[in-house]
Image (cartoon, rainbow, N blue to C red; front, side, top):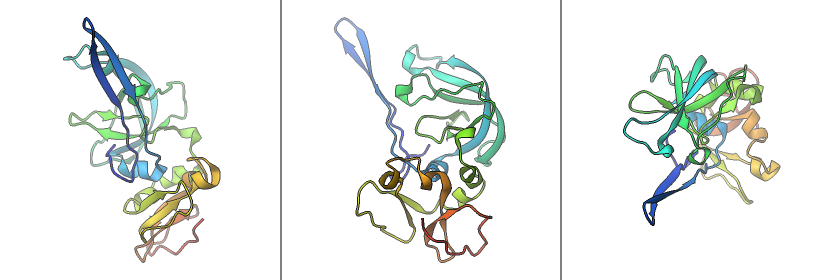
Length: 224
């Protein structure tokens, strides 16, 4: 996932410290900047729905460190929402073994599969992590599933500003204020599950919920 000021940032940090007579200790940690699902969609290079068919541990041939090991998930791709220009078919995704390095654990028994987003390495492999949009498909709302098809993409030029305290004011017309934390004390509230921040015909941005696909000259909608 690309790192930007507005979007989720995955900090998979680790350091090997030499102690005493050559002993090693790893200091690790993973933290993610709070991000609306649309922000994670827009920052990702690849977004797909897939089922997990297998997994195994792999490591670089030039490293014996356990902290370089990755889980290689074999997947069956059901649908691609983003990344058509990067890959036509994806058979594997990779994530760190350790959750402290932002690794994610996926279940091959999940029959509905997962929504997976991530970035593509130079060698064509796709990496996913805790700071990406990784969610069981059954846990997504109907609106989120619809938004994956076109609405999130319509708003990728908009900015979503997370409100933590009041007052929380917009800094521009191309911005939507995300207030779930203020109203629900949760980052998975009404706006995250039901709304997309979409550009209007006047080039301003506004929250949009449900209904049919917006007209070409996007009608002004009432903010939540």
